[in-house]
Image (tube, rainbow, N blue to C red):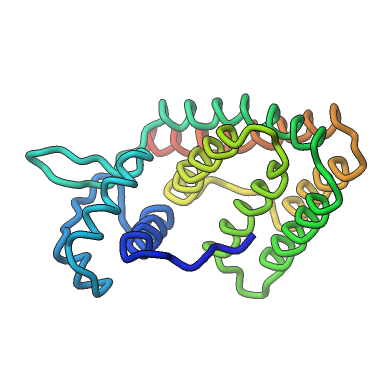
Length: 222
C-alpha cells in the first residue's frame, strides 16, 4: 500500500508538512510562515495555504485570524480521546473486514506484515519508515471493511496517534515483541478466528493508550 505520487503542488506541500508535524520536526504550538515554507519546498504561497487548510481540518494545525497557522498542541485529554475512539472503531472495522475479506485482501495483509517486519529488523531502524509500515499494516488489516467512512476516520486518528508516539517518545516493546504481536494478529485474522483476533487487537490498542498516557503523566510530574 505505497503512497501515490502527489498530483498537485498542494498535495506535495500537504505530504511534506504532514511528515514534518508527525515526525516532531515541527513542534506543537510552532508558528508556520507561508512564505518561508514556500521557499523551502520551491512553491508559491498558494499551495502552502491550501495545505494549511487541509491539515487544519484534520486537527493537525490551528489557524486563527490574529495568530496565523500554528502546529496544534497536544494534551493528555486529547491523547485519551483519540486512542479511546480508535479503540472502539478499529475492532468494529476489523470484524467487518474479516466478514468481507477475500484472497486479495489476505495477500495485501501478508505483504504489509512482511514490510513491517523488514523495517523493524533493519540494522539501523528508520523511525519514519517504521511508522509508515505500521500505518500500512493497520490499513491493510481493515481494507475490506464495508464502511469507507470508518477507514477514513481511523486513518485520521492514526495520524494523531503517530504524533503522540513521536512527541512523547512513549516506550515500546522490543522488536521481537512487536513482531510477535503483529504476527499473532496477522495469523488469527487469516485463520478466520474473529473473536480472538478482535480481542487481540483491542489489547494492542489498549497498550498504545497506556504507554502514551503514562509518558505524558511522567512529563507533567517532572
